Image (cartoon, rainbow, N blue to C red; front, side):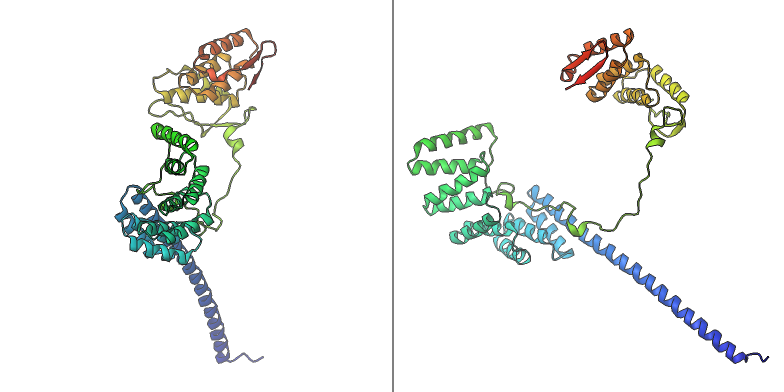
Length: 403
């Protein structure tokens, strides 16, 4: 049989390696492309987060009445993410309080182009129009806010004040009444309504309204609508990012898993084991858990804990009491004197819930010693923990009911 020519074999090998090389290159390119996409998505997410972070810094500056710094932060947020609506809205608010009425109007109008249903830009435009005595335009803007939020106190008060300036008292009274219905403790609405009722001859109701205004004024419990930031109305306050905006939420499933660890942490009364860390810190406190010990070792641990010298440190007290009561997981029939000791420690720093747990445990011991310890504990804590009251005791069955 004739052997294949060397040239044919060589060509076959070259073709095989060429195909394999092409496949490897394509695979490597696909992998690189996926990594590039992943990196670009991560970069985009970090960019969005940086924009929202800059926005929140601007809000913080406004709350410190630093409008100039706030404007800088909002501009930085928009430089990172030009379509960030809340940054645009907040920029208009910051410019209004700078004050820069023209800049605030410009940014508010831009915000409305992005989102026509935002009430804040309409509110800012209404404030600007009112300040410039363009009353009809101001009312129109506030009415747009009220179409979105009919109960907005700031818009109703501003509408009422504009109607008052125009001597349209009936409409003004109606607007102030709506504001008071939404916020009965608003001093601005009450005062304006009282003055208008006096002017229109309704003196009895006016006196009642003004008296309520005086009571709120004297007590300091009322709210007002003013010209300073945080006083101008709900929709004149900057919008903060909560961090749960849809574009900030990572939608991929995190690479984590949950493992059932109850048994390994709590162990079993049969002696299979309880994870307990019996090491002491620099102040002698006891910490729980890590090291496997049996029920016998737990008894030794408990004995050691009870024998410890009680220090003045409240943390040391907590550690001892917690260790004593938690050991009942594997030693349910603890000596009542041990539980009494824990109850005294809990009582010393007012741990009501843990004290109740100790009292309940003592109630299960029907022996004379148990009942005496129980009575002593109740007497000692009667005044300090009077809110525990209504403990219904049955001395024969030692069953307690808490209400």
